Structures are given as structure tokens and as C-alpha cells.
Length: 316
Image (cartoon, rainbow, N blue to C red; front, side, top):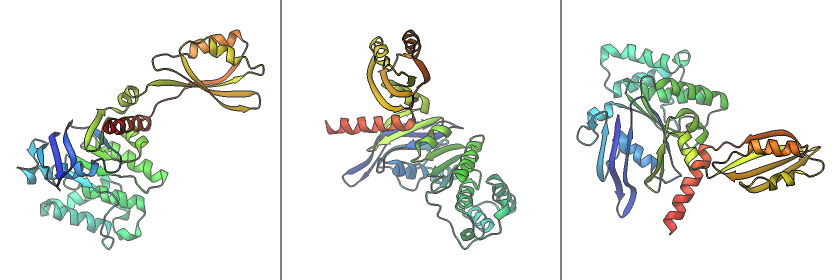
């Protein structure tokens, strides 16, 4: 669906993108992540054909973005960040205008506008001026602009920024529904959002791809230790004896003493699950375990580890 082959982008002596390659398959929702200045926007702008790569190739649904730009761009719908809309148009007028820009045939235009109004759920505000609708509706209208012409690929830049929790949930559900007919590239700084919505993640830093995989794989691959949270009833302070019997424990951190309970965080080797052994040893010491759970790694944890490791590697 999209192939980025050995692509670089230079601005004078500065190399913003350094020989990157990746592939996005049909029907995927792909999260594109990176710190500020990492090269996300530059890469997305090259995929849309807004700027040209210095070297390398970008193939969009079989069309070279450089040699067959018009055909390649027809395959892409782009929703930019910060919702740049024409506030003095009604919702319907804006979508109609986007249909004109995308050269929708006159006889098909009315049906296409209706289709998009219904697809993004803005039919009930179609005759309102854009400046008079909520931020959530504005996000939907911006997405509608990307959907006009039914492109096979959607590129969404920060689609939920500035929304309240209810609006975020609604936009996420809408985006999830799109994968049945579209391939989606999603740029977001909200890592929990990417983890929930995307089946592939591409992480870029300093213009280089540092990791590609599904969120769970990346989380597991970058997880170097297990953290077990334990809450116990231990009036006689016998839990210290239990800890000494478990060899794979690396560190123990006391969290708090609350009424009759004590909380700890125990770090152990990544491949060791010490929960059964802790249960067994606590039973021997007549210690009641109130709660014990494994701390789950997150995409945010993985992202921070990967980018920090990349920073350290760059300093050597």
C-alpha cells in the first residue's frame, strides 16, 4: 500500500531524514511516533507529496509519488493538525468545496457530500457555520475533508488534540471504523491512544527509524525487568524474611505504610514471575497478601527507553 524506500531529506547541510525504509500494508492503522523535531512531519509531508525527498522512492498504492504524483495523491486523504477550516462556510459548504478541490464529477458530487456527512456524523450540523460548532465537530469536519473522494489512504495528524474525553472516545471509534475501507497513518503525541488504536507502530528519532512493530511487541522487547506491586498485612515485619528467600529479586522499594498494610514494589528479572513463590513464602510466615499484581509495561515506557537509548548512542 505504501512503501518508503531509502528515503532521505536534506535542507542544505542538515539531514532531516536519513535513509529510512518501511512498508505499510492495506487495512493497517499505523502509529507514527517521535519526539519533537524527530522527522515525523517531514516524512508525512513527503508521503503526501507536499515536499520532495532528496533521495529514495515513495510508492503509494503502486504509484511513484515523484513520477506519477497526480495518481498517487488521489489515493491519499490528509487531515492536518490544528483543524485549519474555513470558519465562515457551513459544514456542508466546506465538504462541497473539498469535493470541488478533489475534482469530484458534478453528477457524483451531491451523493459524495451526503456520504461523507453521514460517515463522520455531522449531518445534524450540516447547515451551521463552522465557527459556531464545537471542537469535536470541527475535528469531524476536518476528517470529512480527508474522506472526500474515498481515498484508500488516510493520514491523520494529531486527530484528537484539544478534545474532551467524550469527544476523544468518539473520534477514536470513528477512526477505528475507517480501517474496514482505508489504510490509516496516525501521528499522535498521546502514546496511550496509539497503543489502543494501532496495530503497527513506527518510531522515528533524529531522522532515523529506530523501531517498527505492533505495540505489544515493542513493549515486551524493551521491557528489561518485571515490577511486582505487593500489599501485605505484616505487623511483625516478617516480609523482609520472605524477600531474602527469592533469589531473582533485584530491588525492593517500600511504598507506604497504611493502617494495617504495607506496600512494596519488587523488581526482578524480566523472565522471572515470582508471584507463586511469594504466595508460598508469605503463607509460611503467616503474612496475608491483600493485593499482588504485575506492573504492565506501556508503549510510553518503551518509547522513552528507545529514544533515550538512541540519545545515548548518539553521544558516544
